[in-house]
Image (cartoon, rainbow, N blue to C red; front, side, top):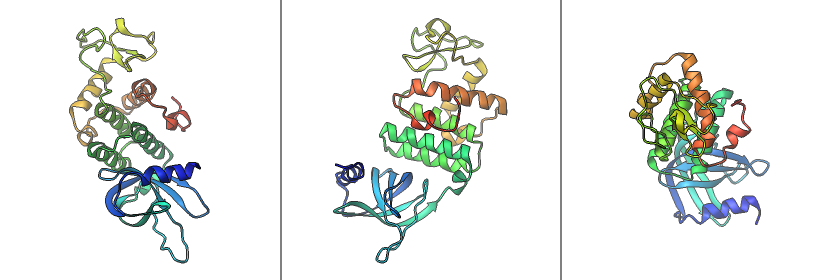
Length: 257
């Protein structure tokens, strides 16, 4: 079975009605023929599905759905798989494609969602909010808050008050180490990284407060550009240990971690 056929077969077997409509975001777009594309949609009602989008042809009206387009998608299931028939666009998130760093951030968010294989409404809301925020906010701030809230959703975030390994409460000014096996910040005694991934108390306080707020509210937290960058770098370096999945967007992306 060819790769493209496998993707169609995977989507086709999801038990979708012959004609369906649902809120979704184009989370991946792959060219498969001269004018056609295979779209991966992230939908809170339909799940994560692969959809064929035909290019301009004599008998088919071309429906444009660029990467990160959000809207209500009208789909039809046929012999070759699921086909995009129409879309009521909510946002195309054009500002993301116009900026390399924002595009890299969106790729990371997509990578995390696809690797997690989760299509829960709460995760969809987080992903959609992050794409909206990328258009106006600092890409570093949005990335920090998305990672923090995504890991919390997946049950993978650390405890910024108590060491998860030995159970000791952290001191107010304590610098934390990191456990590569647990994938979370830990006290100095439980550090397995020999001090390579340190979390200062002010950064720890920021991350702790972020977890106490919703994603949207956490974007209003005030921190210096320098501190924001340090936290951004810290989360990118620790993410491969915290999240049990290969993240190609970090491995082959433009960011140096």
